[in-house]
Each structure stands twice: as structure tokens, then as C-alpha cells.
Length: 230
Image (cartoon, rainbow, N blue to C red; front, side, top):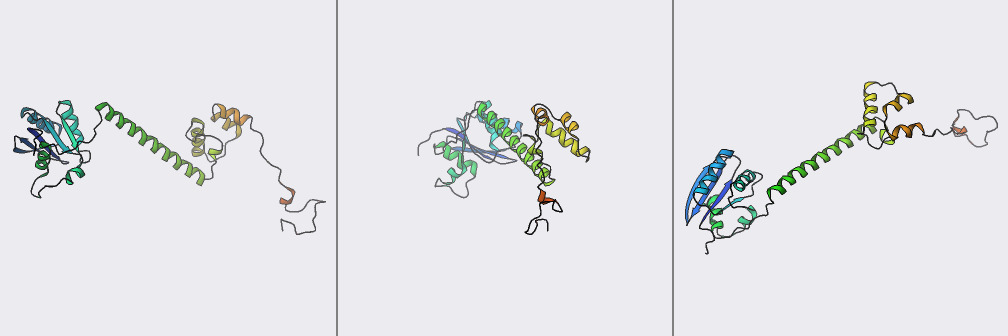
């Protein structure tokens, strides 16, 4: 089988240990390292001194990221391989360790590298995903607050658009501090911006109670049919 890399390394990454197999001209050298930064630098220096041309490792969880970042800073060519792709390749024996198997496949060019964005793109992805998670968490808290207000029959969202706004928060603080309903003058002092003018020019929405809601029919309104209040 054709040899693509004369000297290459296969790495099996775990949470607490890193197993590296250096294949140099068909001769394999197996070593173990820790997962701390100093241990990873020791591994990188060993590969550099050995003249390693290419490094391959599985994309195991997030454990591969520290190695890839340090190897990238030290100008070591590294590829990350999907574990499912390696398992689909025939010829693996059960007594062969993962690092040795990765190194052997890499030496003959049988591994397909996964796409890894540049460092700038990875950092931007991390920031964007973190911002998205914070936005989603804020929306969940807002919905939870709205549910509590509806359960207490506080129709705050019928008056303000944003229940997390400055005016809404002052009204909520007033409700929490004092159970006595606030007067219109007090409410107008707590609200801000267009909401204050909206409340000041709000027309009276009180509708006159129909006569048939009265406990007794008014004079001249008696009906031959049964009265609704009976």
C-alpha cells in the first residue's frame, strides 16, 4: 500500500490521558501524556523533534480542542477525523490500540479530515453561540415572569409592551413593596416616555352598566317575560 507520510502520529484523546503513537518509517513508538497544558506542550515538542509531518486524532467530545489549538500555535499540521469514518474502514484488529490504528491509517492516507474553521471563525462562533444562549435564557425568564403575572391576574402586558422595561419594572417594584393599589398620580410618576402621555390622554373605557343588571327592574322597564336577574 502506498505510503503518504513517512513520519506521522496518531493520537487517542481521553479526558485525563493522551496516547500518542509515532509511526516513523514503519516503526511505531507509543507514549502517554497528561491533558494539562504543560503535558500537551511536551507532546508537541516530542513530535517536532521527531520530524512529524502530520498528526491525526479523533473528534472526541471537546477533548481534542486544546490539542488542536496548541498544535496550531506551534505550526504542527493536524487533522481531526470522525470516529464513525474510521470504524467503517476494514482491516482493524481487536488487539490494535486506537492510537496505533490511527497512525497506520494516516500513514497510508486513508483518513478523511473534518472541516475545522480558522481560529478567528472558531472564536466568533463561540461568542455568537454564547450570545444566543443568553438571549434564549432571557426569553425564558420573561415568559416565566409573564406566566406568574397572569396567574396573579396582573394585566401588566395590556398596558406596557415590554414587561422588562423601565416603567414596567418600577410598577412591579411598587406591587412587591406595597399591596395597596397605587393612584393614577403615583402611576404617572413611575412611568416614562410615551407611556406617560398615553396614560394622560387615555379615554375613559368604563361602559354604563345595562339596566337589566340591576337587582330590581327600574320603573317603566318591567317585562312580561321572566327577568334575567331572577
